[in-house]
Image (cartoon, rainbow, N blue to C red; front, top):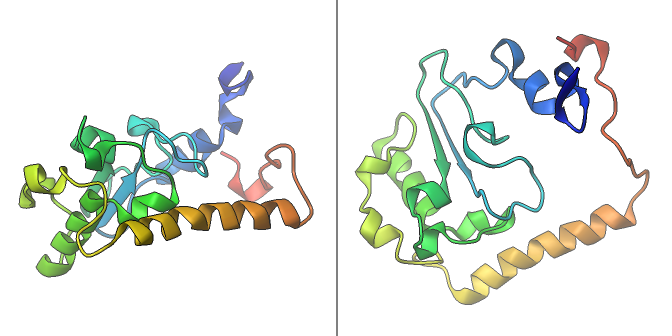
Length: 163
């Protein structure tokens, strides 16, 4: 019955369970942003298996942005962590695109990738802003370690969540 979760049956693998019966399909136009290289909080985060990746069975409009795939080999597609995605220039440019258009998910074709991908930090933010943002993950880790109870394994699914 080996699944993708260290031999546990596939029906208990969190991403399989969450994606069952349309659980990973957007209800409203949605854009997801994620980093494939160093998300220290959420895994998996690569390709279509990424926890952030949404499907569009309801045809409401979904854009999934893995920054390393959109800006490969360039600063905006380099190593970003969970918190540092907040200052990623690609993330900022695509959010700006959606806000200016006022509808739908972000569209990569609406931005100048040569201009956006050349930077590591979004325009208007400083290196100090980036360092402060990255530091927030350290503060969160300290809080996680300080408070009890601690779990060493994923708890079993509640009956209502089982497929």
